[in-house]
Picture 1 (cartoon, rainbow, N blue to C red):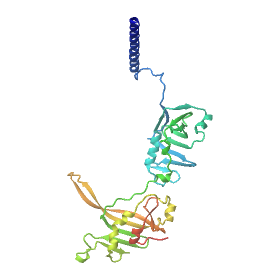
Picture 2 (tube, rainbow, N blue to C red; picture 1 turned 45 degrees about the vertical axis):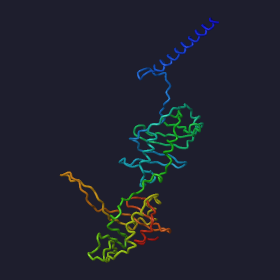
Picture 3 (cartoon, rainbow, N blue to C red; picture 1 turned 30 degrees about the vertical axis):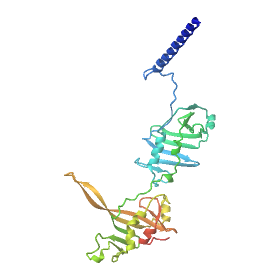
Picture 4 (cartoon, helix red, strand yellow; picture 1 turned 90 degrees about the vertical axis):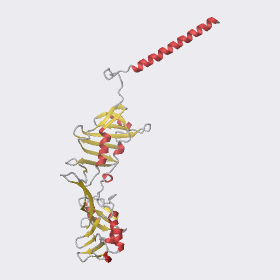
Length: 347
């Protein structure tokens, strides 16, 4: 019995020593990884470059949305992207920055070698999205997006630079190419005018003019005429503006909101009456800080500024077509306040 107990203890000690040896060996092997100077040629590469473009020299891009294809080019001074079918349409450059960044360097951990006959398996024989990019470094490349893998929600992807390979890329990349030119329009903007800073508001058409003028402190020194707003039509004598109109004149400019254009061409501006418009001209004051070049001291000064809005026809709902000069965009704005100050031209 004692011999059996000794044998059992001996076997336990051997098992403990074997376990310690295994643990020590595992730790040593784990820490004994090759550094950057060691030979790593036998390691498996799991990071592949699926696409690469030079965003600094990119000058053209095109892609499809269903059966519609949209092509864009960088303008001559490299400051704005233009839609080739309507180069006058102002586009927001941030959309193109997003598209370029999406393809600047696309890496993935999956690469499949395929034949041309196997592309259909991955939805790449007839891709639902094809993006063509031209830059001065890599030339013109076409990137194709095929079927979506339901397991990892990634898309099969191929590049014209390597027709024998299929990759998997993140779904955020094709999501950058879903906008039509009309959805990328950069709306016209008007200056911000602080409340109480408007000094005059004029409606000027080809055959008439109506001018509202603000007199700070009243038009004259008579106590009973401390009326601030006066109006004159076609240069005639100014008359006191009614209290009702005086109360809304400061808000008239605030009703002009340029969002969601209703027209994108010069022909549409003609239809809306904006090629022969009534010009709404607003003169207002702005406080600016100026610095004396000699003394370096700063001071605040008040300067006059002018903003202009083109007004066209009114529609049946009382809205007025509007826009700004040097633009092809047309907007529909609320005409309730403006029409009280000037009768909008009706078609």
